Length: 198
Image 1 (tube, rainbow, N blue to C red):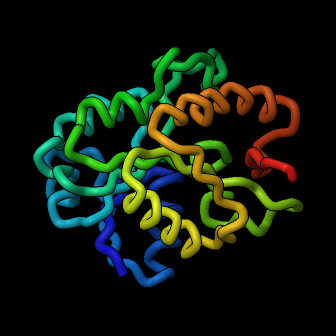
Image 2 (cartoon, rainbow, N blue to C red; image 1 turned 120 degrees about the horizontal axis):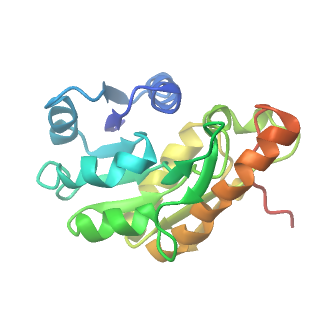
């Protein structure tokens, strides 16, 4: 059982918080109220960034002291929005939100995952017609192992989880967001995820 703080109480954060609570973890959800995120992060071992990616870097950099030594699980994608509200362009071309967070928070173990799928798949991967893939990017092996275990608590089989390597590999998974608006316009909001077929 871990003490987990979920930053962001929208569809992504609420979905993750409910599933992790069902899995037996002690979960606190923090919204954007001043001081609430800091208080939640201070008492948690693992912090999940489920805030809108465009504002995540500024919001989390302000929590440097509270996030010192913690595992920060980043599930967000930093993009601009198109006219229909769907993602348009990456905010950090040639880099990634995860890399920017790790640079701003050098004493925090940033792990990127679950950002290559629509949010319902994060906590119910087995509902898809074929196995999806969850990717891990991060510098600290122990932090990635802890996140790997959290993913199994969310229903991810270990063979569905692929460790891509260091935090720089998050550039690839974050770029996958550019598929999303086209798939949604083509097929609607039916849950989907990237999958590596072998």
